[in-house]
Length: 270
Image (cartoon, rainbow, N blue to C red):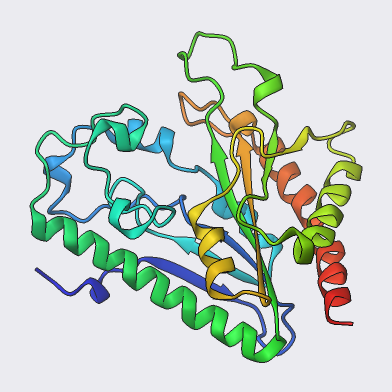
């Protein structure tokens, strides 16, 4: 078996480092790669996997000078789970889906967990650098979720329970970070989204992500990671077809929050 370090786990893009704001946008569930030796073991088709991956979220990372885009599919290793749960082994781990027709060997499972370690090693180097240069940093932790789970011909799930953008504040020190989160939310709600207002609410479908919790646990008082779960109103979640107008409008809406977020973070230092 090859070393885990020979497998790319994510791509990190940075603008001119000296001029960059300490703002990161991460799409850790938009990866699709699964190593060749695992592919014959899979029970799910590429289309079925794509439906549960966070399609097109990497496009939204362009709002930030530093971008993190995972390359591995969550069905190989999920960077948004604790390490011991990062490989889906049973349907219970994957929303009832049967991921494997033949369970990977112990060695293969451990190799996937080594990819998990390699991902967080790269993230730590990045965040250590931003901490050293700027003293603090902010992360847009970008995700998406399905809101038509009953089938392609079924009605959409309840709007009451499925905001277009779900802000996750679980695991955050709101005494320290609350003003930044408030400013982000205000900017997003005030944005003219194709002539209307986005449905933005907190902790309705999701309260936290493991990735954001990791940031707060490892960079207390320095890093703020705000997890955002966007319902797939920007695409047909069953066919995989995106709506380019909505995709770009979401990018613009998120971009409108960057300066307010940075200004709020700067205020924390003064």
